[in-house]
Image 1 (tube, one colour):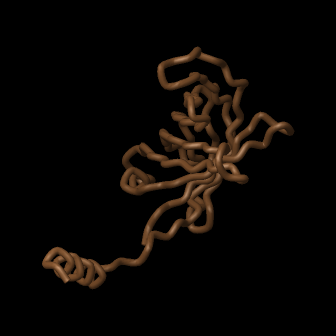
Image 2 (tube, helix red, strand yellow):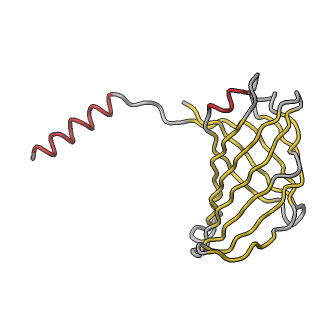
Image 3 (cartoon, rainbow, N blue to C red):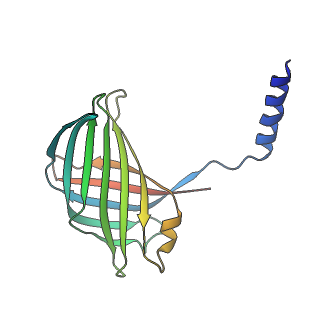
Length: 166
């Protein structure tokens, strides 16, 4: 065994001794977001660009997050890039007004790939910008999300946001 292999074995043992539990995901909220038709913004160097206006909607907190309940404000938008390899990159920016009067700004970045697997891959990273007060903790956490459409029955998407923790 080489010195490099000994060093690697030592580092792996040291890393294992400092292990932490794997991250857990807890449903923080579900949002039903009403959208308008997608509008093409033309082709760019990375692919076709689109915008989808957000008309509004509703959201409610998951177990333990019941205070997160209210409406999705109209006026946000989802900017989309259909890459040349068929993968979609979405960047949605919108506001959610909590019933207590607080307004959250949600920055949701989604990667959608339905070109390789039989089931659509649509996973996102959400950043929340909350005002000072009872919801300020949202600024200091990581959220991942899922995205599903309710088409053709309704021009609505379902966004589920999960708080990541240990």
